[in-house]
Image 1 (cartoon, rainbow, N blue to C red):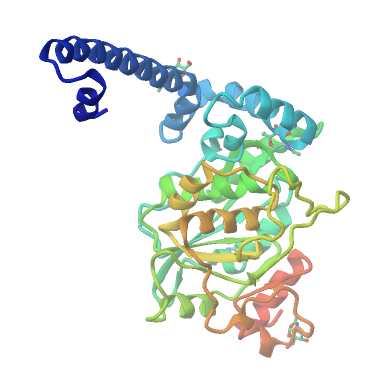
Image 2: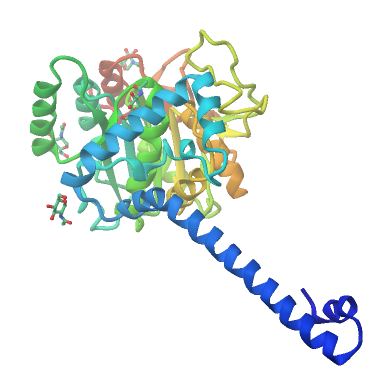
Length: 374
Ligand SMILES: *[C@@H]1O[C@H](CO)[C@@H](O)[C@H](O)[C@H]1NC(C)=O
Ligand SMILES: *[C@@H]1O[C@H](CO)[C@@H](O)[C@H](O)[C@H]1NC(C)=O
Ligand SMILES: *[C@@H]1O[C@H](CO)[C@@H](O)[C@H](O)[C@H]1NC(C)=O
Ligand SMILES: *[C@@H]1O[C@H](CO)[C@@H](O)[C@H](O)[C@H]1NC(C)=O
């Protein structure tokens, strides 16, 4: 409120102006007090959410375990039922930030198994493999092939597996086996979300969180599925090429102009409530995407303001769009394969990724490329 306008309203006699000034000041003070208390109210009603965020870095395992599980369980259930979702959104619409938006945010979860020192030697490339807790065969196949490489073209590479909670009736026994496996290989990370196909977005965001908090010094990272064959030599050649950017860079098998699946029976179904647009922004297919390691932190940040949905790769695409970052076309896009029609060793020596049909096939592909006779 400018004082010129006060004069206009108050008239021109000095007495009038003085009285009116006092009145106006009083009104101003009142308005400011009101505004301040509104800000304080908003701040304190948000505080629980903020509190979660601070836990992000300072994890107190004993304390946050049950807490994290119980309330996220509730939120996630609600997310899955559109009607309940609408109801909840309506009931909390007075609050500026919907609690729903935090469900996939990694600050909601914490690591039960961690390898915080893995990055001490500043690896050039970190391979992060989301995998189900019971998929030991896949992990072992990777450990004996591309996951066993510690240097490629003179650059340090590390491979880590990320699992969620073991489920089912044998969950305790499965957990013990995992811990044994972890002691043996020191390459397992476990977070406290329920491991399921529907929760892959959480898994990816937890991977991003680990990279951002435990390994910011790496140059590149890759999220690569456990059924993938990876030709590390070719990947390294791409990453070391002088025109491969080391910031805001992500590449792989690009998905352009993909319509959102609205068929409720499909496992790729995403409701309009969670993602209203008819098409996804350009994203990189989840089987294997490689990115400059500045991105994990940025993606985690961007995800805070977005409604998560179950297509992890498309969700990363939505985060990237929010950041104004476009996935890059690989210099030779045919190197990022899904399936290979004709898996001759000749082709395998040129690809970067291709899907293997079994852990055994990962080993076969590796042997063909490294020319080791089986
Ligand atoms: C973690 O939380 C537990 C239980 O609240 C508490 O006893 C312990 O002192 C905390 N540890 C740290 C490092 O804050
Ligand atoms: C990894 O490679 C080393 C030699 O470089 C070998 O001794 C070891 O057995 C390999 N690990 C696995 C799990 O195959
Ligand atoms: C996803 O993870 C959350 C948190 O652990 C859990 O409550 C929920 O049941 C999981 N959803 C599915 C479909 O497994
Ligand atoms: C690997 O090489 C062997 C012999 O060179 C060949 O018989 C086999 O078909 C190859 N397998 C794949 C999956 O390329």
